[in-house]
Each structure stands twice: as C-alpha cells, then as structure tokens.
Image 1 (cartoon, one colour):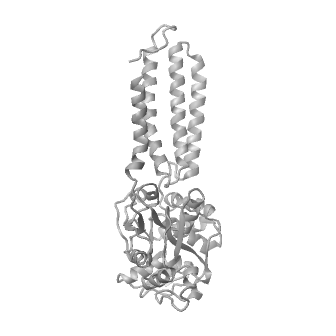
Image 2: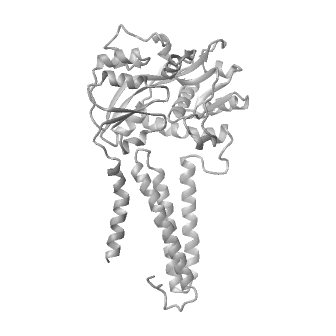
Image 3: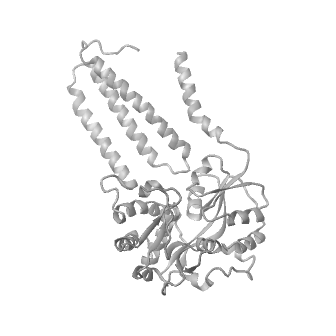
Length: 403
C-alpha cells in the first residue's frame, strides 16, 4: 500500500511542480524584439508600473502560463483569451497589413500590382504574423474570408518562382529548412514593421493596398493591472515610429508620424468584428499553404479537421476490431488482457483528441497529456505481457502473478 501512495505522490509532484518552479513574484513583460527594441523603449518611458521587459522573437503567447505577467499580442488574440481568463488588455498601437516596396520598383498600388509585377515577394512564416498577413490579403482580394483566393494568389507567385518565405526565426517544422532570412524588393508585412526596417537603414515605401486590407490593434495582455501615462504613451509611440490607437491619438491630435502614409490611405483598412471566427479561419491557413502552395503533407493530416477525422476513424476501427475479436477468445485471461489492451488504446486516442483542443496558453495541460502517453505505453506493454502469459494457461488460471 505504501508503494501505491509513493507512486501517487511522485505523479502529483511531476504534474504540479513545474507550475511552481516557473512562478515568480517579478512582473515580467515579454515584447516582440524581432525588429528591435523600439516598443520596449516606449513601455519604459510611459509606464507608471514597475516591470521587467524581455524581448522574444518566437511565438511566446504560452509564456503567460509560465513566468510572464504580460505579453505583446494582437487584439484578436487578446480578445479571445480574455473570454476564458481574467486578463487586462491594453491596446496601444495599430498594425495594418501593407506592402513594402523597395526603391526603383515600378508603380505598386495594391495586391494585383504585386501579382502582375516580375519582382520576388517575401513573406514571413512567423506566427501569428503569417496567418494574419494572409487574412489581410484574403480580405483585400475578396472583401470577406474566402481564403482560397489568398491560396491561389500564393500559388501563382510560387509557380513563377517569386515567392520567398522567411523563416529566420527558427520555424524549421514549417519548411523543413534551417532558419534563414530572405531579401526581396517587395515584402508583405505590417506597416509598423516597414517603419522599423527603414529606421534600421532599409529604404522601403509603405503601400496600403487600394483593394483593401486589415488593421489590428496591438498592445499588452497582462495578468496584473498596469498603469501608463496615456498622453506620454501616445507621444512616445509616435516618436518611436508607431501609430497610436484611435483612443490614444485623440490625446495628441496635432501630432502624427511622418513615417507613415496619410490617414486617407488607411480608409480602405478594416477592423475585424468577430475575433473567434477570425482566429479559427486564420489558424487553418498555414496548413493549406503547406499542401496547396508548397506541395507538402499530401499523405499526412495537415489541419485541425483532418487531425480530428483521422483520430475518430482510428478510434472506430479499434473498437470494431476488438469487438469482433474478443468474443471469439475462449481463454478468460487472454480475453481480459485484450479488453485492457483495447481500453488502453482508446484512452491513448482520447487523450490525443483532447490535446488538440488546447490552445498554446494551456501549456500545463498539454504537458500533462504528453506525460500520460508514457502511462499508456507502459500499460500496453503490461497487457501484451499478460496476453502472452495467459495464452497456454488453463481457462481457470486467468490472473497473472503480481510481479
């Protein structure tokens, strides 16, 4: 009996200790440092709250489950997460899907001009930027969420040998290539990113596509209340090359950044109204690009629907095979072992299905699901051993020894 309590105690420690190991009393805010620390300078200057800033280049929204008290996110991410948890959302600047055009390139005014030009086009695959940029392209081409239009657009660029995907931030799994930065005379990116590139010495023109595009608010999602001097915040954002949100801009109506196009150019940009629907559609775009544009994952599941479908088919086949096979087994011990084997496989599939429903913010639950796989693997071995042991035993000798 003591051994059972010891195993239970070790299991609980294994599950819950990581949460305390990462716990910190320090207020840590993660910001996007891929294009420098301009936004960090804004936060330091305008914040009334004391916190520590850390720059990250990767997809760090799961940091909220670890040591981060707050992170820099887009509004669609923040608004969805706030529905399930008690977070504080501080929108601070605007990010519009735009086209960066290098000097010397012909007249580029919109999405169709990019497609009809002969220049190479670069696009980052860093998430969630990749999905959100493609959603901006989708909306500009169709005025709604018909994502096939964006896929067809990228297919044309790929067929012409003009599509360059930038994976310099280590997204090896997407392209199966080592991280590398690409340069192109035309880039699809957010307008504030173009400004930061220009501040670093590049010479790109910001083009707001005439057909239409999307604008997102961006700011800090925090577990704790943060305080900023709003007027100073707006002034610092403009000074560092950002467009403040509409609410902050009203505090400094006479100040605008000369690094951006005139406000009239942004009249074609639209804000989303349903962040949950938007994220669901955006999440399915990268798998479509991998299969339809890059020609990858033809013989494996590529998106959430296909993952779920494959697991449910496997679950049904498992139950049908064991249901047809077990009644024909006469040896009671073998029958019990096969029932245990079937239940273990069903449990394994059920855990994998459940894991698909967790977001990156549920990092602890995802980790526990991975740990449970070891339990299932051990049980499979034990039930197979039981089956082998009971095969040549008398029917009344159906329970294996405790060893």
